[in-house]
Image 1 (cartoon, rainbow, N blue to C red):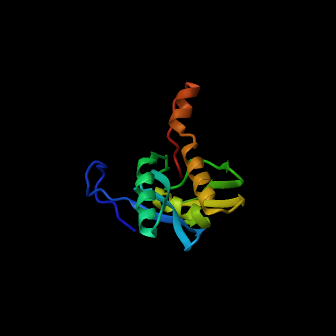
Image 2 (image 1 turned 90 degrees about the vertical axis):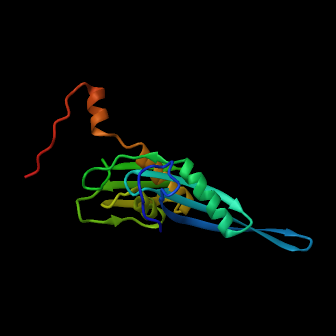
Image 3 (image 1 turned 30 degrees about the vertical axis):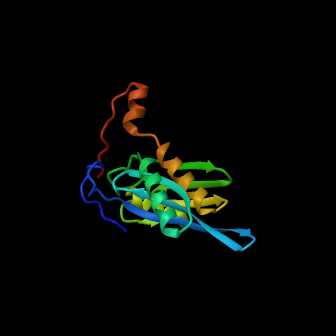
Length: 173
């Protein structure tokens, strides 16, 4: 939706990519009829390794969307993406009854994932990835599982430091 203007989050003109993951309508039956409320799940990111998720409720769709977007901005964390715009390694993560499998892909592959996974990868800036939803495919849980997986990825520099070894740059022929 929105393109990134500049990289200073304190600046009011700083805009993030935003995707609506799910929108649900609930009804409360009262004496005079039904009262409808809406629940929105939104993921936001800068397209360069920052991603967040938010869920909010409101009496109107636009109110729920804006509140969820605000919550997602507050929830934003940094994830590590390789130079090929893919994830660091293969990872399986579980969130509730949802299980997601994420695998790195060579440059030019694109996002091969369905449902909410595709939207999370798009706003996070991951361009080459393979994803599979196992178990429940509820959009909200899939988005949470995907973000959890991205946040828990190991970074080569941190692993090398923990092991006490030097990180050697890989040469590709």
